[in-house]
Length: 251
Image 1 (cartoon, rainbow, N blue to C red):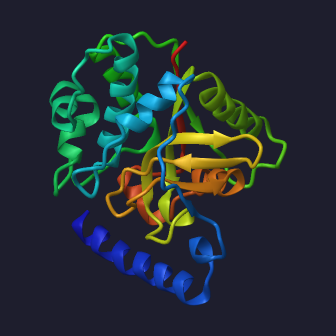
Image 2 (spheres, rainbow, N blue to C red):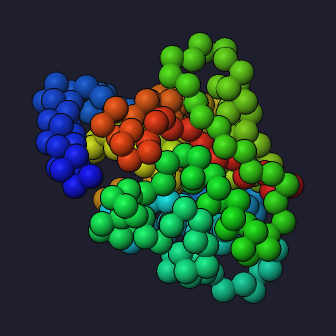
């Protein structure tokens, strides 16, 4: 696994360098807009909460921890306003699904680091159970590559984004190719959605990567492309097939 990981890095940096030199990928035009002020929708307490409890990952493979703990703290805050937020260390000690804590270490669990989409969904479910939260359902959705513009999966995702932003009844954690959204390496990444503008159809990401200093906004098409990228076949050895999202329906 270490040998394979060492082979992946040169490929990733070569691809990054190509996009940078040619102005393609996430380097193309005004694809990304940085958000400088936090969302303050007083009528949407869940949206307020996910912005308030958004944290950065503590380790280069711990994007799942930061994303899940942000959502768990946001939901807990609605159920009990006096609740002290749990830390990333707390949740790793409490939720052991899929050897989550071991996967966050330098060596990973049997050489595997981070969480593929199906395991992320199970970790979300078990975290909700561990903290006794009231959630209606958790849906794990893989987004197929090259889906037609009017596909049911795209339409359902747009509907759920609108519900999150307009009604505050759900949260969405994206599992996506980070380099397709922002100028960085094309690697599997996880972060929660922070907003959706149904007029411009732009999605705001609360990226947990410390190198992304501010939340950023991308078009829905770019967002969907990031979700539906089939990760390069070299990642299959680590359990990564494709991206998608985890939908948490609160009420």
